[in-house]
Length: 585
Image (cartoon, rainbow, N blue to C red; front, side, top):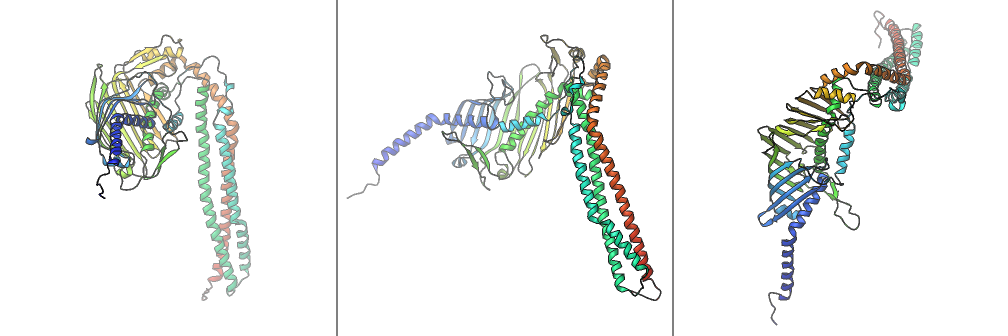
């Protein structure tokens, strides 16, 4: 019986399955890949990602994307970017491990801030980052430029609207805690008992003889106890000094809380802001905050999807009929990152002053989901006439460091409305700059805008107001606007400062036209705040003063008693141990 080398009955179904698989690949691979890229991109960015056409050419390791549109996660009817064509050279070997390594990416025809017909913002995982950034933004206090309307009713102010009472209660609790600790420390030292023991020993030594060795030994031990008590009292005195400084800082904090209460009351009663720095923050603070918010959003998004170290990360699982759950990924050393873009050449367009867009080039390197595995920071560079941009995302070390700086000149800047005013600023052609340094949770950022051909537009449909008329008379004759904003501190306690070349002029005009009325309202406001705040702050300040004075006097008295007891005991010991011709142990 002969045995065939080929089982033809098995070859036929295998060939059919192979042909069906090849046909499915030819027909569906591009569609499946397009859907996957759109889905992943939408999840990562938090806004709709759309692709007109995607083609896979795996034999040559190439992926072509045409007509890429990424909606803005911030503006409803605006795109973050559009791209005419993206061509990626993909390393095929990491695909076997379900990892994507792109050796080179060429992007052409990038355009930013283009309009769209529908809202592209989505609800997804990035909402966590968006919510985090929104909570951070809410901490930035941006004053409102407005006039008081009607009679000033200071009765609207009560304890619940002020921060000084809460600060006073906190300081009062701190005073009680410190008082208890200091009293316990003094009682624990037992100064009175030590002084009494030293006095008794001194009295016993008055009738002693140099040959009473046992009594002399007891006296030396008593003297050592006095010295130890003095050392403990000195340590307690240092602690009291530090605690006193802490309490005095709390008293100073009451004054700072009072200033915050003035600002809160001013906003509640709709009093105008007359200080130049506050006017700059009122006019341009919202726009500066929006720029910083967007920069921080991308930084936080990078920290989420490019975490430092080799820690496990969880991503949403695939959609199923049952609960999707999450997919946990545990990175390994000496392995490919889940995603790596080695190098990218970007060609983008920005609108020029004459309306015709100009083309610029940028280089991106080392974009990866696992910075520790790759071992190098992500860098971005763009340099061209009128454009300077650079970014460094270093998540290789345990403490992430994100720095970026960009300056663009000679382009048409986006306009914006002045908050609470029927006036819109159209900067036209100008220069804008933005820098961000985020190290751990410490943040330093600056935003600036300058234009010498601005155009002011007044909304005629809005009812006229005295403040609007004042601002319009000032700004309508100004053709140059120079705005500078800075952000400092930590993510938990950010500090915002904004200034412009309009601040001083507006402050002067507002004071001239409404200064007396505003000054009277300001005096009423401060009197009301002082009345409410002093009810809580004055007793606490008195408690701090009484406690510090009392404990200082007690320490001085205890120290004097110990000094006196030690001197008397040492003097009597010297009298007994300095007999001529006799040497005692």
